[in-house]
Image (cartoon, rainbow, N blue to C red; front, side):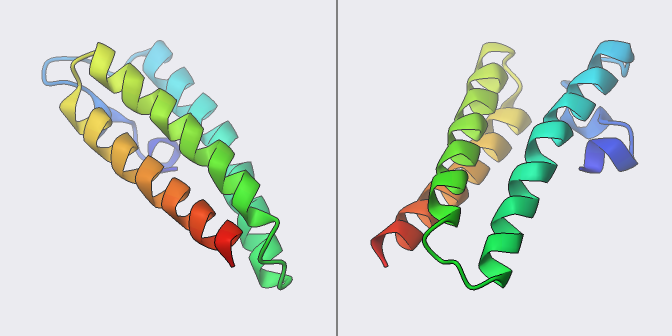
Length: 99
């Protein structure tokens, strides 16, 4: 989401510039993250505690993919942030599914 509000320069390696491909990536990422987050929030607000688990699993797996991209690009910030978010999503999913 931050990439949609501000240019995604903080996610880049030093020396990389913001160009149309970077903006496209930020928008594509938001197109995945925003609906998944909205579904989880709506389900939780509706009191459905068992349905958000699978959605969070999908979100966590997507974040693992982002972490792999960060590792391949040697972008430490992307690797760390995506790994952390993957952990939050996956642990939250496991917690919800175990209730």
